[in-house]
Length: 590
Image 1: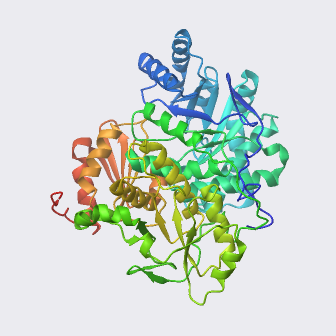
Image 2: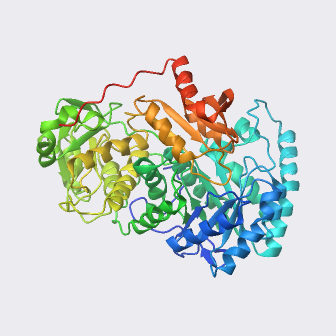
């Protein structure tokens, strides 16, 4: 880590980032207060009764802030009726208006709800994917235009005691930012800071930041860089942070991706409010978010050791390649999946039928060296070995997982490979709730992988052999470490969505789930579509009610396709670009 930039006090000891207090109605965030859980309704904002019912359902589930989209001024005006209906039911959960593109909608919304979310990439800013060079004078002219649009909202929020979220999305950076900073975490941070400076000019400080992306690595780097940049700006720039992974998807994949992005930052003491964005009914997001908050580790160890990796730019640790159990690992080789002898024996009779979730190496047969990362003598002995070794943290060590493996990586010679574990106490409880296990494993392993640490993984916190192996591979996929199946970027439903996201996502999965290594984005509307699809090979985006636009990368190539034909047309598009293969015949389970 550079001496100039730091995003947390100590990478080996948990401490909560100190932030100022921001109030949203009766909810306080920052200032050491508990992490606030929020979600977003999916009903049409013009349907007052449906919106009120959904807000009440979320509040009953434990949601502490509820967000509602407001596409236009007309939609925003109905927030008054929604608010009145919610309050008449005796519910005091603060409401947040989600604004994209329309400053007049934000201004209207601020009259009725406690918080307004604006996206710097498309609020009074241009996003036409134009390539041009901005002179300093032209750049300042653009900022002045934004000041004229954003300033009135800031002043109204100050007058009415509203809060603002300055919410940058990786998928919707403006042309101005893209041309100066590129599609980068730095661009995301600078985009948000421009709006923050405008707010501060009016002495308005009741705002929070967010840096959301569908790629956990990008999201983690952006938040880390934001924290470091805020510290550089001065001690009074300690604004709270809202954490989220956009377009995480559904099912296990959505929960794993969210846990990697949100959980790893929470584990470093970063984050004051969170939302888990799932392509499911919004009420299912709340228990996942609550479980992530409960999983925040504490403690650490006295080290005096400095990290030897750059936390602001992903690079895999440079270990040397070695052969273990018939597989190459280390260097740029695939991250390998280990299992225990007991679990291997339990699945040995059906390994050929396990498809993509096969175990690769038995830990007990691997020659792995298990160490206490605080034992300097044992580590020095390994470092003196002539050939590269495979090393892990010994079970039973009383240290938080992330801190333990970071300490091991900091002390161990780079040539030695590291086997990551999700848990240092192998589970023997077959009846244990799977969600906490899934989230804890994803947080621990995903955080370390996104640090660039690790050459192989083993999931010990899940007792069931098949389930632990599936979880291992899904974590590697979500962290971008090993792509073995189709990758989906699917946004959560909201009032802007132009088709049934859950049903459509499932249809697309059924049609394309066998296309290993192909990344497909499923977007309910155009708000983040093209930008988030920059990382996708193909995109399926709502263009108008009942009509779908298809993309290659972030370029729209097919327009206004009837929804009933769109999945088949997507298959045709994938075939046109040479990425289609026929699905293999399913093998009956043994």
